[in-house]
Image (cartoon, rainbow, N blue to C red; front, side):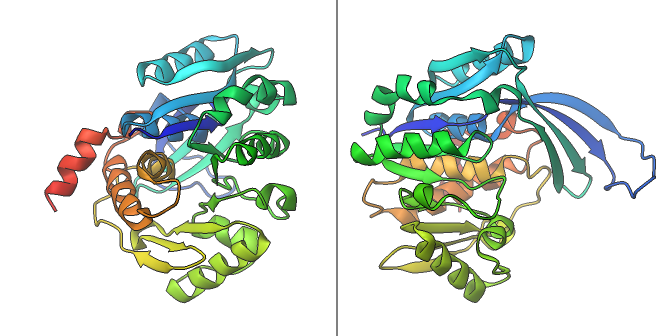
Length: 307
């Protein structure tokens, strides 16, 4: 049975600037390459879910421009339902990615049309949300609309997943009380909880704090160290697959999309789903670009069989 996943999220065109390292204040630094690719946390997560076999729908906004048409085609090419992707008077979102030779990246975002999602857009998508198994959102679109979408979802027994990125302090308690699963990385977990996550003990402390704030289940992704999960009844650090990272852009998004494509609504196969998602993420970081690097179900399963 395929999971039905709806993503409320961002659609960005990424401009990737390949640089040896981050420049110092006042320094001029030559780049070795420049290219464009589809991205946005919402798009990445939706395409990851779709490529791993989930029946995926998208709620979002694009500008009436070439970038918007490009992003729409990326979603459609992945087999995603785009009935709830509408056009805004503002330009399509953009992200400027400073990709260092080490594989680490720093990202600057122009929200554009992503910030124009309104209550009426969520209301128009009510039926899409209600028919889903999971709804996923992030903080690259207005949090008020995440709150509205999650209220609809909870009334219909749909599992709500919040990827709190880009993270900010003082998340609305009304949103958190409707979160079934929250999935920060270690940096985002620290911003949300003021607990610096450096090992399994501090991951436990941060996850406990997130549960106290309202989230029922927690996965903290720890890059090369793996993913730490905490449910009301269980917790564990699941080790990462060791690879040589070329570009970490969309690693977390690939993980999350792959996770919800596999996860049972009762979380009974959580660890198994994390292992699958970790393998998907490990494949993604070995290629450059966000959407181009996201693997298919067939590729992930083949890689798992090689372990």
